[in-house]
Image (cartoon, rainbow, N blue to C red; front, side, top):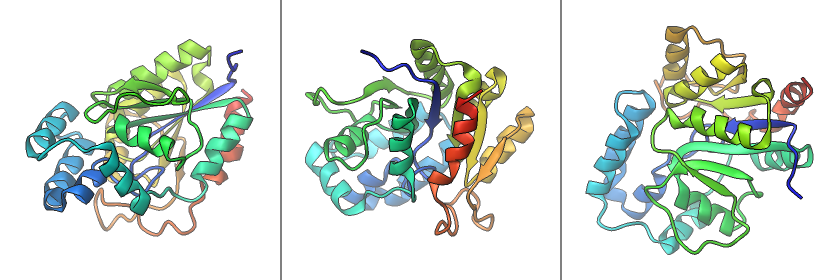
Length: 250
């Protein structure tokens, strides 16, 4: 019997729920690419280039595709989330709230994360197919391809329609300008918008579009424009439970 979800959380991943970038596993495997990968990441999260252009630049620089063993080696030494993220995913599952990861990160990354039991099971993951592995276990979530930042809103909408979730019972979580189109979709449809350690690029995007961020969560270091967040020692994502519960009960 399929689950009848009463609400939905659709969240970005990199530098939002986890202190990593979408290409960290590449720079871990090929350290010489780190500077270029960091530059490319900042360009598209600041909406200065398209993700298609970013992935094309990255693919040209890769000596060879990242193998599952190389991805596993990275995860075994480097995987982490901000405090409370796994617990929030589990809480949403117990409350019949669909937790969807919606990111420009790679499908292959999440395939190996879940295969290695680094995270509780997530029902739906929207991610980029540049790195994607075949022959995955049947317990894997539904994967949806995301090729541009505008796909975040489209994919959230498609999942909400599939499960009959009202748009005013959707919580969207994002941190940077790359989440701007997702927030724009949410503002138009009545979703609740949470800025997670909100970077200037997301603030600027929303200000230019007249979008209200309903809740700003966590601390961002304004001294480093669009760098990783500042002190996150006091950030615990379980603190969002009461907010999500309120939205789910609308």
